[in-house]
Length: 348
Ligand code: KG4
Ligand code: ZN
Image (cartoon, helix red, strand yellow):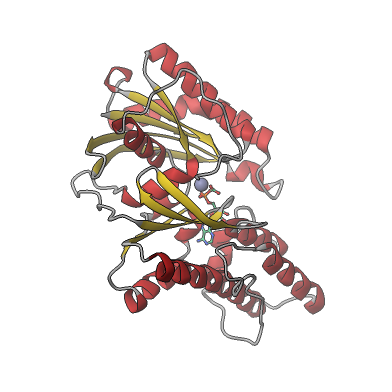
């Protein structure tokens, strides 16, 4: 089955052609093309994503992104079996742009259309491989999924494909949002996560101590706004920082943010004893966080399979949306001609 995926939930305009095969239990995906066009530069001047600006940029860029996805994959509309589009969660104006474009394309090409949950896409991203030859890794269920992005921080128990149970989520800021806000306090451009990560690599232990919010809360919820506020107070009290002090602060922020992720995940692994751990979302591009999870699994849970997406599929992309659509379609789900944007759509 050849699926066109369209993703516009935030500030990336993405289209992808995925060639999907295999059964519901063992789906296989070959990524024929995956185009991601970031609007970060347009939003940087505002310090974050402006929803109506994102919508306009998506509308402007989608036709060319689609044309590129088709040509990179060497397919024509005739070859497409279905069109998948992100229906939420995300910024509603941004979602509208992708949905309207997908609806129009499905009408013109006379193709079935399906709306996909963005977070489900981030879970499925773990089985995407850039190589069209290497088989996608098979997920052994039940799995625990940790989703860490600019908009979400959540732990989800995946009993099987499409059977999700949310264990907990952030009560305020998402982890990526905290990285971006701290980066802004330090004068880094949006999105700041990669800048913090880069600076943290040069940091050393320096006596700075930031809180680990909700570390011992006894549940699976997170809170990252207090950590960001602690950085704000530290900067206010210390005044001008040297380059080394800034790096040390970034390091301590990254360690604090990671410690909570690791502690909650460790507890969920012990309580629910899943066979696999899946991590998804843009923040898993962070080198320290990736290494910390590799270490956690190899030292404490060596029998658990760890699935971390390739960097190109960690952040928002449309291949994950097309792949998730295949799992729904092969399960016999019906398609639609119109899709409703659901900014606060939850996975379970
Ligand atoms: O999944 P994603 O592309 O978009 C959302 O659905 O939110 O995640 C984007 C987030 C941003 O907050 C960005 O700063 C963060 O991922 N991010 C990182 C790194 N690379 C991206 N955060 C920390 N370290 C990184 N290397
Ligand atoms: Zn995302």
